[in-house]
Image (tube, rainbow, N blue to C red; front, side, top):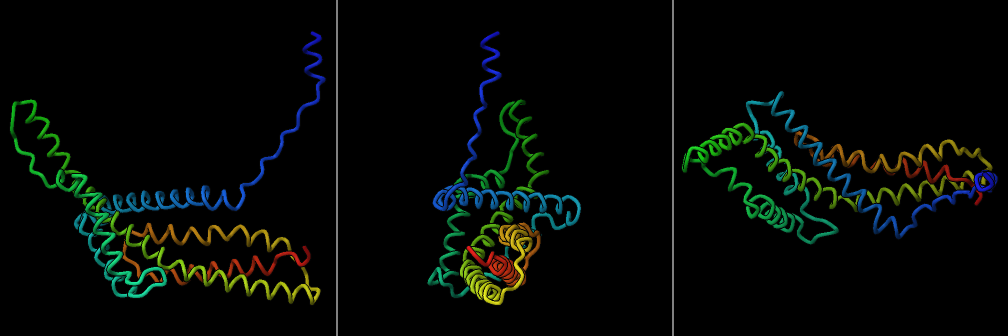
Length: 252
């Protein structure tokens, strides 16, 4: 009883709040894993959208729909990304990378060989039964498996386009920071009204303005001209950063 009384009267230890991760921790651990998660979610969502489309919206086309999207996206890339700040010859370099990825993912792994291999009725009854079941399953899922190949290639092309568009987003973000700092100084020296409401709400939109357009672009089941989506996304990011920086408190 004495022990229980002592334990109840003993002061509770206050939990030490966890420190937020620092810049290096975010840069080399948290942000890379968040980027990988965003890419995986986009790929899975694009595959699900394509499967639903094959089942309900374009069953006559089947895997030819994703193949046409892949050919259109490849043409957009080869025509528009002839120069880049990151690569000297982006078209040749990226086509080499995509060819190697296709070879490694689908040819060397044996996926396409298994998909195109004839399942003949050979061996005993048990073997023929297994071959017949595999052939039926292959015929049923063939369009979905081929669509998986084409959607993955479309996904790789779009990821490459996003990577090559990083200088655009960096430039727009820098312009937004400079514009916001100028408006902050004008508000500071002019004794204008300071609103923490605008700052906190604009700050919350920086991450969605960066990630959401990328996820939408990577998951689209049809071909889209990159500038139609990337330019408004970059302008939106610059606007959010400008509003956030401009609404930052006047005195530190």
